[in-house]
Amino acid sequence: MDIDLLFKIAGIGILVAVLNQVLTKAGREDQAMMTTLTGLIIVLMLVISQISNLFETVRTVFGL
Amino acid sequence: MEIFKVVGFAIISVILIVLLKEERKDIALVLMIVSGVIIMFFALSKITPIIDMLNSLINSSGISKDFLVVILKITGIAYIVEFGRNICVDAGQTAIATKLELAGKIIIVSLSLPLIAALVNVLTGLV
Image (cartoon, rainbow over all chains, first blue to last red; front, side):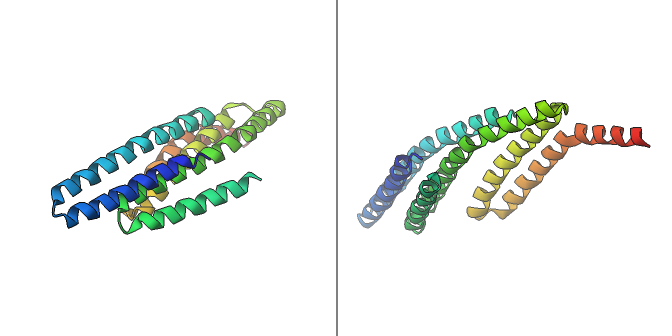
């Protein structure tokens, strides 16, 4: 029940949302899009390792 | 009891998802996937003693072991297909969810073919 991963991802999401607002208000839409993409990529990196762990565990438990 | 931890974890993740839903739908989706994965990890840790007990029961009862192997494989496939299907439904892609379910069913049926063959053999033997 490692809840810190959940808070990490939520934090990155909120940060990206705020940065997006700030950058769009400042008139730099392209940089806003860049920060959104980088935030999403960081979050995806975290998630992919978790999902591969889950699939590996299911493989060993059920003998797939 | 551990169930309180799981329920608390689920409620916290739902709150965070709703918080992020308007601004960043994609990160809310990723958050939903991660909370699903963590809860399934918890469920998986509870499954292993059940499987060990099943194994010992089957061994003592003398039924051939490959039936249980197939059943466990089918359960694992159903487990993962259900996981993927719910994520697709939550993300709004019901078409992909139904196709995933269809693929899961086909794989399960293809796995259970030897069982069906064994059953037919037993039946023909009786007649």
